Image (tube, rainbow, N blue to C red; front, side, top):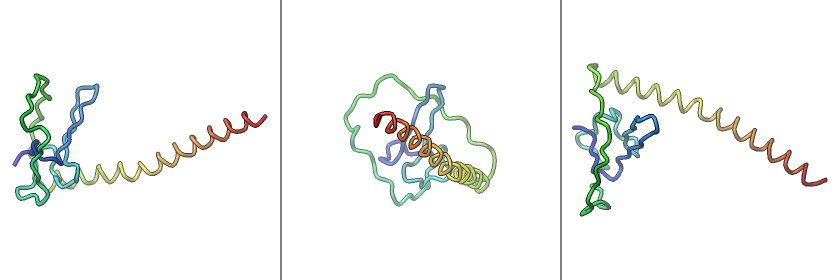
Length: 112
């Protein structure tokens, strides 16, 4: 089953480069952006756009699904997500330290 774009948990983001990310907000589609699980327990049809007329903006077509077993796709995507999550905490801590350092300098200048 392809990604259910009518599900309220479906999200898509378009970037300036033209790349589009399609995913399940609840992270329940391990083969995103190609497939949702057949019997997803959290599928809920989105009601907000009922009756709306959609404009002519069309997202780029999704590339073909790689010709590899689903288990391999899931393991590669999971490993990539784990790698990003491992680095994210370090990057956030580094950013927070820089922000605190800038705030301390600003405070010292105002006290004079």
